[in-house]
Image (tube, rainbow, N blue to C red; front, side, top):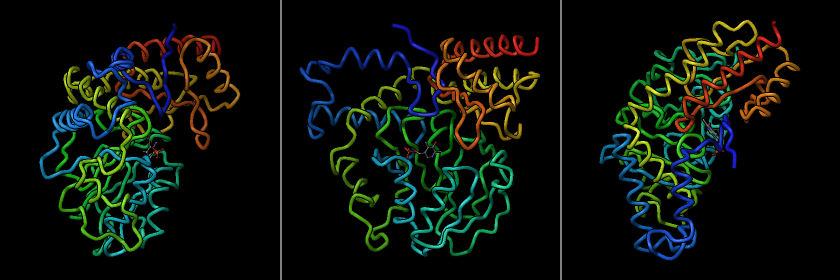
Length: 361
Ligand SMILES: *Cc1c(COP(=O)(O)O)cnc(C)c1O
């Protein structure tokens, strides 16, 4: 068996230790005589799995008691709709557009009310984060929505937008648990697991209790009310049980790594290795404004489509997989989430240097 260095943006690399443990437990979880995939989500043994996952996540991210943690389905995309259905009481909300996902969230918001764009970096193909310290947020807006880390373009908000007192609703799909965060600054955080903390099939929602409405917009299905899932501790219907179990293992792994402070240090180091090389390369160039660079998704290119394609193919043959950039961006993207070891990044840069030498002489 040979595992590659997997730079996929998502579903993405998981810690090898987690995968091995899951493999060991596949046929017989903790003496139950069955796999976690085969057990009732109402059983005592599964109840312990989901409760432990939640309590470890609370410890890891410092989630206060007045916030609910929900493990839901439908991905971040369903949150684009669930957020307005639950929170858009005044039928108005403010949106910052810094990439494809932020735009999709805004488009979905328009189905339910007035979704007002208060800032955008569309004018330069989302290669930067606009200044969001003095936005014209409508006084009756129910929330301010933004996407903290733009997976496709490789930018990140290093300074929180000033929400002017409105609840901040944040898509953290591709950066959640990559660094410490102060939950109390947010109204609602959502993140699909398949980028940085688990397999596809589960999206984690952290919501301040007082934002969970008794009544949603008319027509909101039972399954799309936060209250339904909060009241049932994410067990209203059959949850993505196996995915939650793997997420739980990742939370335990992150705690053992030293928590989010330690992850931030590692992630800065990893991103630094690539960005430092890009800054001195005469072949490759980073795509985005330096001050807005993501630690998770590093986007770069040579400016020559054919050469980029050749690089992606040669890299794949050398064991560096999934480096092709998103189709609207082109070039390359190296996603280097928590589970990507530093060796993967160092070896990738060695390979890039070799490629550059070959091309430039
Ligand atoms: C991947 C991604 C999404 C979409 O997630 P799905 O689980 O496919 O719905 C949304 N937002 C961000 C920031 C992402 O990276």
